[in-house]
Amino acid sequence: MMSSNNSKIHIYPRDLVSAKDGEDSSYWWLVDRRNHNVVELEVSSVYISNSMAFTLGNIFQQRLVKSLILRMCEVWPDVLYDILRQACRHNVEHLTLHRVRQIDDSCMRLIAESGSKLRSLSIHYRPSLEANGLGVLLRRLHHLKCLETLRLDGSPLSIDDDVTALVHSMQTPCALSNLKLLSFKSCLLTDEAVARILTTLWDPDRLPSLTTIDLSLNGCYKHGMQA
Image 1 (cartoon, rainbow, N blue to C red):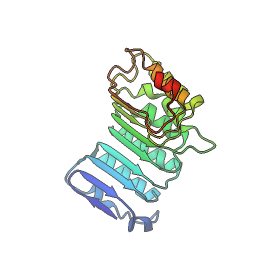
Image 2 (cartoon, rainbow, N blue to C red):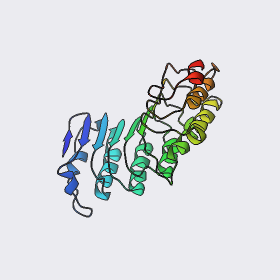
Image 3 (spheres, rainbow, N blue to C red):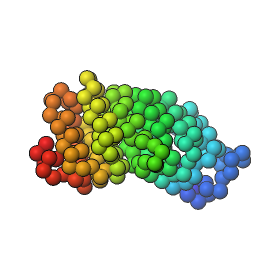
C-alpha cells in the first residue's frame, strides 16, 4: 500500500508486494501530483522490484526529495545501487538505510563519494562474510563535507577495519568540520575501540562542531572510561 500527503510519501506492504516487473506501474500517481516538494520518501518492509525502482527514480527526477528512508527492504545490490545513485544525483540531504539486505561495498562507496550534499546519514548494517561495507564508507567519510549527523546504531564495528577507518577519517585535515552528532549505540565496540575513538577526539581541531557522541551499550571499561 502507499500513502501520500503534501510532504511525505510512504510505500509499505500489501498491494505493492504483488507488483510484477514489466507490468504498468501501479505507482504512477506518485509522480503525477502538482506539489513537487517531498520532505520524506520512505519505503518499508517490501521487495523493491525493478519497476518500483524505476518509479522511485521518476520521483527523484520530478520532485525535490529531501529525505530517503529504506527500512527492512529486500532489494538486489544493483537495484539498490541505482536508487542510491539517483538519490545522490538529486541531492538528498537525509539518508536512512535500516536493515536493508544486500548493501554491498559499491553502495557504501557511492554514498561516500557521490553524496556530498548529505547532512545526515543513518545506517543499521549487518555485514556479510564477503563484504566490509562500513569500512569502505568510514574510510571515505571526509568526502561528506556537509555531514552533520552520523548514526551507525546496531551495526557491529570491528576495531581492525571499521574503527581504524573511522579514526583515519577523523584525522584527515579539515574533514567532518560540520559534524555535530556521532552515534555508535550498540555497535559491539570493545573497550579498546571506545578508547581509540575518544582519544582521537582529544585534539580540539578535529570535529570542531561535535557536541554529542553516543557510545552506549558498548564495552566501556578501564581504557574507555579513562579516555
